Length: 245
Image 1: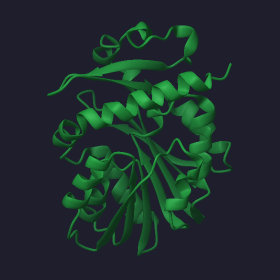
Image 2: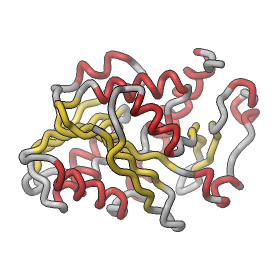
Image 3: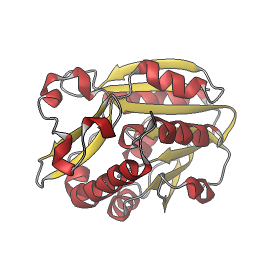
Image 4: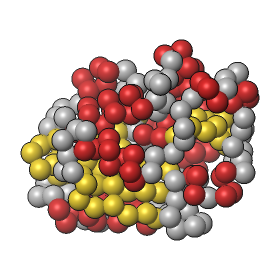
């Protein structure tokens, strides 16, 4: 059964508030370039003709642009995000990257008109640690469809999702839905509430998308998976990366 619109809107607002609250701490804890991100940057550099046109959907502090530059990828990079503070940090931290011209725009991906802010087509569209913040299968499918529609022929779509259910340390931290006035009946299998306690306290909605679910979203858009791998975190496998064309 599809998630009710009022529940979806409540969870979307929860995550907007989450990022508004944790933006500074989020940036502070995400200065490094994880191996998975570096590997993806190298892969795009190997598979795409230069110069590239990369759209980073839900770019956060823009660190994937830094990963691309470190991998020697040249071209243009556009980062989209809903949080003003993270976008400001991204602009500061990507200024002067060698070989890569960067620009940014504020968009709300939950709104279907977000694509208006883009200048398609792109040789690659990436959404790293993004999809799992969007409640409801139908919304996630719509987002993947919209991203796929921004690609050049044979362009690459790259998604990463957080595999938090595979780590006992995150399972132990999940909060009851009553924390935000909901119940299990309101949400979908794989949905969870997780706290953030680094510097400030906040709560976020997340959805566990495994390879089967990500691949189904991709195939429904007429694309096919060409590579996938897991990396990062203390366990070395907390992020799933999937590349399709």
